[in-house]
Amino acid sequence: MERPFYRDRLIAHGIAALVPAETERAPIHRVIYDELVRGIVSEPSRTVFVDIIRRLVDEGVQGVVAGCTEIELLVPPDAVPVPYFPTTRLHALAAVDAALTPS
Image 1 (cartoon, rainbow, N blue to C red):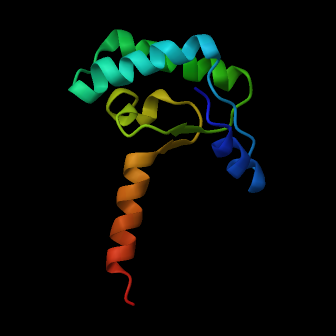
Image 2: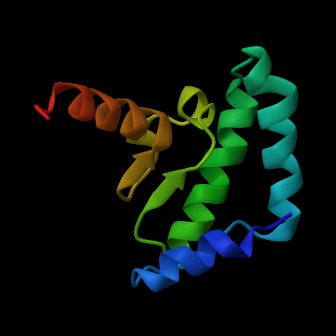
């Protein structure tokens, strides 16, 4: 299920969002819920994700958000040819910044 409110929030900040095609979402969800959340990281699944990312880049995306924390386990930054925004890393860095910022 696509969540249009995420797209609306990005658009409000001048960012257009392109999501994987509906036919690509089923394998994405399968890999996340049947493999990654169980600690299974496989090369065939990595290939599925990287192929989807490359198709989106071919369509003009200028950055990729790894919106599920487990995706970072599967897709390393060097597999993405555009800026990559892994949410686990970004949240961890923000938490450290907040903890170290004097009040």
